[in-house]
Length: 227
Image (cartoon, rainbow, N blue to C red; front, side, top):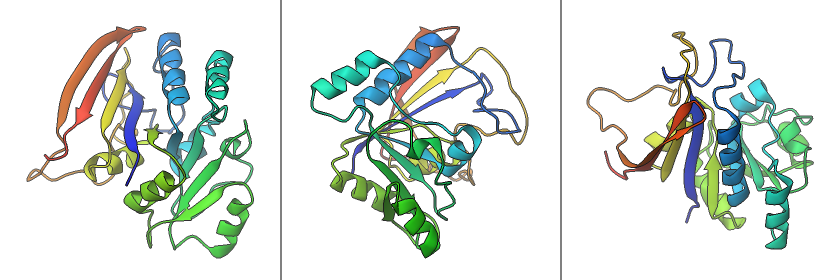
């Protein structure tokens, strides 16, 4: 068993998540920020890859006090479980995701992560070992399901999103497309990693909805289970 997985991201008109320097760029506006906060508030857990943590040091908390209060009124923690995928266990024990706001944290590592790193991270988070050299996302999702996670929000970065899509582990894809071009052959894109060959099968999407948001457009797809 695994959680229902929805991927959310903001990209430029040319499909970039940030600049070639991998520094955070403000692509969307206040309307989309509120939408993302509502998505977080409705999720049981929020996941990012170690690259996103190194680049942005996010807290992954719910920002709106009213949304926090609504979660608490339902008997839930103020914030969703925060999950970091970190095959080698390189996450700093001082990272914001491990300290800002109450609630459970999970770090998914592989067997290749040194034992001392697992122990250090285990002082601040639940450590799930899944996979030999890199995190096996399917096993990690099973571990999260065992912890009670039924709705998982994946926020990036491009390598993690690509893995969820190509391994057919994502159920929905929501993308805000901003009114800018960032450019750069090495700038991270929505789906990085090795990519798929021309022989496919490619990841198929069924369009659910397109709506204007801020000065861009929000696109919502369902992910087909087969190419």
